[in-house]
Image (cartoon, rainbow, N blue to C red; front, side, top):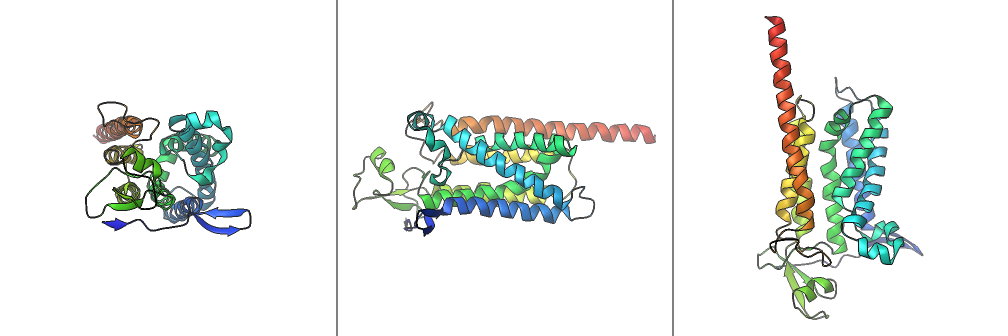
Length: 287
């Protein structure tokens, strides 16, 4: 078993000003996405300029922050929001919903497309390979914050988490919440770093390196993320105020990921069906 490292969630404290690791991880994700976007824009025939990438990333940042926080509040933290509405602004404490952030980014891409005269899927196909870096960085922030743990495990890479830092998790598992006991749990956040960060980035970056029909890259992103997240939810502890929604295993994360899987499959089918129809049309014209 591994021991959870004692990492202070606050990276730098300057009097009342505190810089949290969680926020820094988001900045790392945004910066890497911006840099990779500029790299692709500079390639011959990309059809994008670095100035457009700068604006694109700004739209993404706004969509992620507003959508992610609002999504978390609506999907996972609504009871707490009712008690204390100010929690909506406490982004540094964690609590960002990927699904809410996705909806925010999709809205931002629609607005971006209107400004620059681009179609919605032109924008989403371009940004899809850039998003996993931010997803992986965000999960590193979750790990440092000691949140979103998986269930109890005896696997050799299980993480021994002190109950003083994971009181709710230990109490739900029937372990005394004190300074003596700890709980071996799945490092769920690291699973997501690997799948939603590293693997998803490699799949999308390689897939999009060659010309693909419109909607294909967006569809593959939705499909892969949905499958990865749906699978990881089997070892992730559900939110205490939700628990399992059905059959003692269905979680809110799975419920929100299922439409992504279905829409991803649909977009891939439409993308390649449209390309086939276009190829047939060109063949008839040549004949």
